[in-house]
Length: 120
Image (cartoon, rainbow, N blue to C red; front, side, top):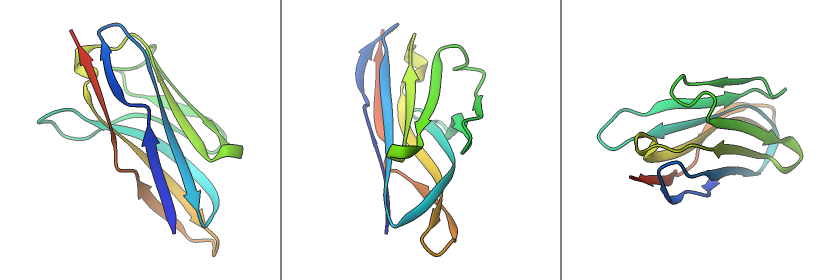
């Protein structure tokens, strides 16, 4: 059994900051790529940032220079530092991880999401 749990969402004012965390637990051998996605109200889910197992990162243009993705492999945890938040960053943020289980099979796992609301 593998669990992916996000935390850190909340209400923040325009220009503020938040740190999201994603913790992976359960019967895992290793974690490959990890991704933050978000789904704004009444819009499609979109990729925010990704990080490989050796910490190579990639960002959506809309968040580049404001958000920083990182991971702590010893803690099976991924982070998203969000600075300079804008009202258009309001969304449910989801953690997506590619996890290798104890028998060597890789699977795609999603968290339940955490709400980020940025007020004007």
